[in-house]
Length: 367
Figure 1 (tube, helix red, strand yellow):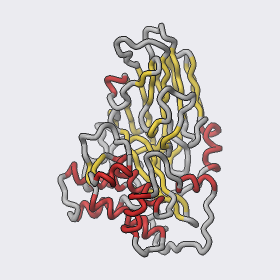
Figure 2: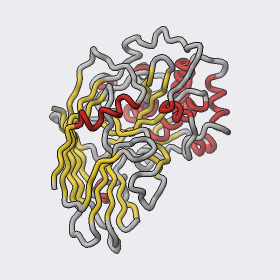
Figure 3: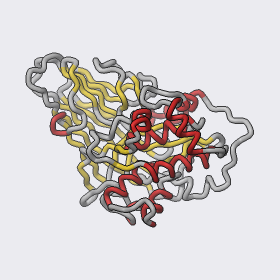
Figure 4: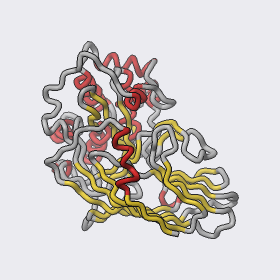
């Protein structure tokens, strides 16, 4: 059973439905072939049908999904956006008695650097006299189970931004506070659970990308700036960030990379009159740990400067979904986020964070 989708028509509605950032016409685009091979591992004693949900990339101004092919021995498989965030999902299921559970996916994606700060597009940004957010932006001011905006989160936000009123400068103050106060902890499972209230209440200002960038998102929302995580995966070697580190921001040999552990959460915030602005405070912490650099090191500061208002294109985004229900609804609901594939056998979840235990292999090839 094999299905091929040309994505232009499939995803065209998503472009008009989302507020867009400003693309950079002067940067080189990159094309990747991203394959996902699933041979799901059934834990001993598990019974019941198998259900699998796989996050798929969205289509917008800085990444174009050119095609999707998938095949396998599944009973049913289809692509859906039927959830509150419109997170694109490939759902597949298998009967209880099937011996193997195979699914192969091949995507071709074109990416482009997002560099509004580098381009100087935000240099003279002034807050409009009257700010009115569209409905799709307003939802990113609201709290979720893991992204609280009151209590200790609001206290931290007020202390960090002080009397500043310009939302761009407020966002930069939050980014710099995270750069100077949070650290990466490689012992954290997966990308972290991004429980901001817990992080700030315990004072353990450590974690991985979802933890750190969720702190940015929560503090920004508490400061009345729409913000959201963007869950995705690295697809190859960093180029611009590579002048500081070839190991911290993805890697590839002969343009081919194993991405079983390449999942990465970024963030962005919304400026009225401009659009969505990229930021990645978490990768500053990753750089510091990987390269054993102090926060005031000149290279750390260069990375921190670049990652406020800019993203490099060796990454593709899946969705902005937090604390939501997949479709069809699994036994475990709602789920925290959707950066990894999710599967249940007889209602029991597999370990998404361990590629071998789950049964998947991700390979990226730059074309």
